[in-house]
Image 1: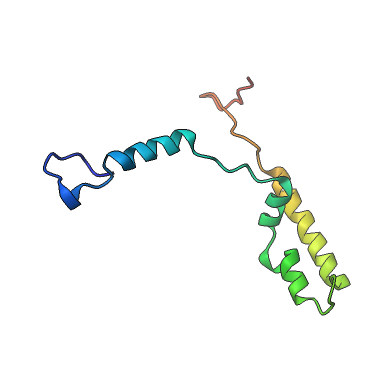
Image 2 (image 1 turned 60 degrees about the vertical axis):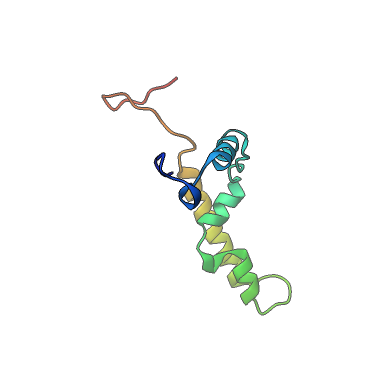
Length: 103
């Protein structure tokens, strides 16, 4: 955001009144997105090569995956689920000695 200057007139006036008011309203009343579900986190953690949509596009069958593709998909999904499960769900607070603070 530019600094205020009394010399700023005409085209030099950027982010003036209406824009500032609208920006403030959106900061207060704006809609935030919901956090990702567990399935969405798992799909995001999987390598692109093994995602279901990619595998189904490469499958020789009209519907479904080959047994090898299905096994690869399930293995990669299990590995991604394991990785997602190991991630902390929220911040943890530690004191100055490095001990976990339990609330």
